[in-house]
Length: 611
Image 1: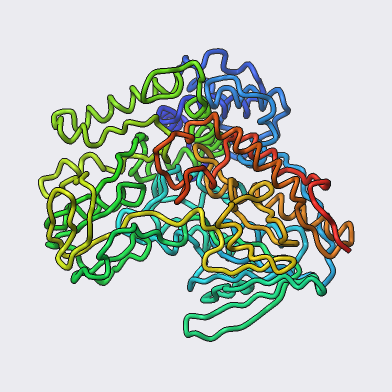
Image 2: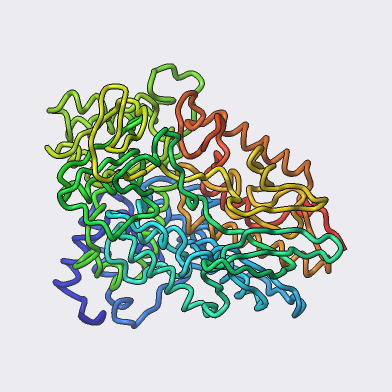
């Protein structure tokens, strides 16, 4: 149905399916009246007002206005159902596309100023795009895999999908390619990233099947000497004035330290290296791990496998979302396609729900002493999650006990229920919480017995705290940067490493958030900051820039201080935020707006500039 035909009864039917808060924000924005919706609870008024305001915009007779700050603020407050601090206004204009957004200055770099981007996942793609947008064309992207896509090329296991709404898990400049589901599956996400590459016009600058192995800083030439390898074993070298490492956190599979793994006579693989040549129908499958990947894999394979045994070290807290697993079709699709500004305001509403709306849940109240939670807000969430567990498996008290965590919500990464509890209820699925002693030729042996299986799937995560593997980086003065970063992961703003002039690692240590945002958002923040550094290098006519040690130490200490008062700092609870360590090294304790703001500009005093 063309836009011009969405009127009368059709429009009324469409509006009845709209999200109330999103629609209220749309009406406020398009009407130009900050007082258009005096009562957010009055849905009838919101729909009547929408039916009055929308037709000329739907018919193309009027274009959505660019809201002033008063109008924008009113719509923001309605979109989330609460007062939003004014500091979010610029963020909302940029991240929703409502605008206007102040354009970034072009970079008039010399023709021989060469940039190398390592990695063509979401971060590498947006970095390359921003470099190109600012006028630098002498850049190359090196990708180890046969295709751009990063984690969405590597992870192809059954059930693989994003656990952030698709309309939010997208770049601000390319928000909706026609997502097939509210939480889209892996093929759609891979297609999306490839589409962004093609539309950005730098596909010919990507060298696939090329794995960077060594980076060495040449102090005399002020260049990085880069060694790479192809799958057939051939090697090569290149050089660059600036290197931007964007290999991704969830990249190098992590296998558990279980004796006997090499003795297993059946088939085994890591979830990120799925063996699609094996048909699991009628097979006995062991899944080791209960994190994000396992919780998607088990519901997907349980209906076809003869038996699935899940080995759990600790249970997870699971959120729910009413649209998880649902197709984005029909009237829901029409709302995004046919109601002007609906997608933009819904994006902000969801970004708050999956963003700073969660901040109260992760901040420790020092006066709170109730076990299993850290504050009144966190305890309220815990009660809701416990009620959900009871709804799902309350009639199976033994199972309910096994799947109920004893730590506060958000201590580990929060997951969304992908049918996990339903899968565990199946007769052919068993949850085993006994400690694994060894892998035997026939299966898995625990302290309480042994299971005979045909296939073992290691859904055991990634070496997220080993940022440079398998690269060997040698910095200024011959410093072994790879070894030092493994021993003490820290970087200025999580991006700039000591003794590494003209090198940025994105994301590096503490350059992510653990409770809010998403990979696309983080990538855009980092890309803006890095390109601002490039602009300053060209403007100052310097050959190199490197972070001062004091700046790195000050930033690291501020992050550690903030983390100490956060939910993630729970003793005795392992998570990928810590990796193999006892301290958090991958994420920062910050708000979304705080994270976004810190990458808006460059503190020149934090760097040494070399001519």
